[in-house]
Image (cartoon, rainbow, N blue to C red):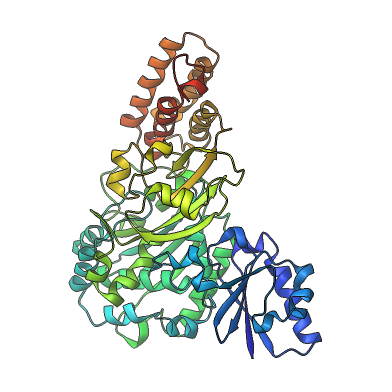
Length: 514
């Protein structure tokens, strides 16, 4: 029987993947074809979606941009045998865009049925968990520490150090919290992982629980991700029924349970302490630190808080050993990073590579330049609060420290591309406007500073006392950076300052070059 793989990822659904699957199913029944359909995650080549794959003796053959109206003609041409067709892209695993990647966290995404535990195990799942069950808590934490795994949510804090702190804390209850409130513009890796390989995240959270002595976990997923919420809930139910979760994890003496909490619709809830407040049923507002959540976290108990990508890398670390993960990367940035290409880009999607790849290779190599065909003017890395970098930074290595040295930050690995028609004064204004809209209101620099920032940028663009207002804007940025309680206000000056530095002409400043 021939297998037809059709993605169920939200990106594919948005361009008609469900309709394609329904039409395939209808015609398979009507024509009595010896074939069945498996719904998968997306391979990450989003410009080719819906991308269907046919399992053949030569491998899985891909057909791109399939729509429901064209399914009958596809079947007539013999796609079930991998025959030639205008939409045929060949063996998907051999496609240059995929073949050049180093997929670790995303190794199974787009390949397996996301809700088949047997499929997950057949492709290496649960190996890390079973190894973890044979180790002491200290040994697990040591493996994670030696791997060099750092927080993929943006801060880059070493995961092992955070885990060691929670392990050493005394408490009657500890928690593992996964931050899946993926609110940065141009980021979608968390969603794609949860929709395409949810058991990887579940396995990583169980390992974290065993490592630090936590028996309860929460996955905080933004409410705008209904498909991810549904998939994770189904996967948790399956894992519970199979004994992977529950009072006896994989038949061991360890217990761990999981629960999904839908986000409150606030960008600031992506900040770890605001997320804790939201999980507890309160308004999502920043908690002052100290105390740190590792010691006083959810419900006042020691809590590990990690991002989806961080926790989902843990099973591979345990399965293959710390040294294998440590062998990948650049300087202090070890392992792989899941880069997300978005914006005005010809080939948007997911690129997983070891840290150290150049920005230019991602934008021009994997991304193929702009979708409009016009020159790239700038890219923003790290979400709406990330800095702008121009083509003169194309050689910068994509790693934590390298990007900081270049005046930017890695964040969650999102890269948004703009062509030469973008007005950077408008982008700088948007950063301040976004901060004003999304501020939780707890601290004055963020709450008031962002509003004053919008007003000051407007005066600069209008040519009103530019020198004085430029000086005022810089003072304002310094106050927000140093005085805000969290990154919401603290990082907002980053895109403003970089836009002003690189493209002064867009602000109407004479003598500058854009």
